[in-house]
Image (cartoon, rainbow, N blue to C red):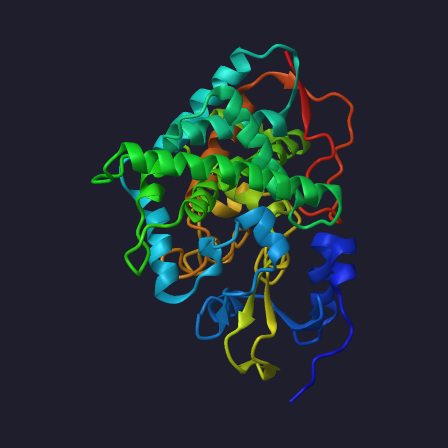
Length: 412
């Protein structure tokens, strides 16, 4: 049995960001990284077989895996992300039902398109920051779709707070403090809203995401307490607003490879827009990895993983692995427009995790991301604008990262 090394890589992760784990993977002869994070023995894995291993709850669990700084900013205490087994599946079924029944993914895409066009038509200046505009648009769209009774001004504040939650979860200092304050503010407001919904409706039928969360019953048959219900409502709203990161990356891709504008404009069926959205999610950095704890003593390809060790699944590295992607640093949506009949590229695409959304911990809102991003990319391609001089570098040391300016355009 190999003992875990004593060297702790927490500072290296914070310093090098997205590049930290792929760099370590390149130096690992057997494709397995052994280190420590925050003092805990850690093993990092990559590849299709690693996905199946990682998302098997007999191997890796999420309970107690996410540190409080992440829960107090990004996900929320008591969130679905912290659950395992049947309790997790019952809670997650609530989210999956929202995307399948009634006003589903296509409806949310329609809200995004309408709100985007309204924002462009009502602009008060020629210079627009794509990231900021997309965050506001996505906040309004998910508010409409989820049936949350907020004014436009309150929704704009909610969208700003959601971007703060995402922006500050992986960094110490002021960004992290802003993220904590933003979460507390919105959990307070939405918990009060959940209480009001329960006092004014019967809950016989959930006609909106708000009502579905308010009246959801966990495995033990009890309603979520108002604070936890607020956490889960934010877990509908926050990831939708976070698509603004991909929107800025889509603008960056259209600027760097302008030939895709004509292809998106000519795309009447939406197939190319979907492929473009997938390639944005593959090519650009979003989540560096996902983490869990070893449920018991494990063996991975001959490597011992002790119980309660941290297990990482390398997402950013897998999305750029030359063993899986031909020319991985070439932006090429065509890789998603057809398959060679031997393998489906979507099986290897893991910007938001892998595995089965219904039974595992893969993000259930992935279809929302693809649909909303395809809409925004198409709308951007149809806009007439130029790109003023600005810093368009995307620093991999910053998590989450973004073009430094949020991608500013001047509408013509």
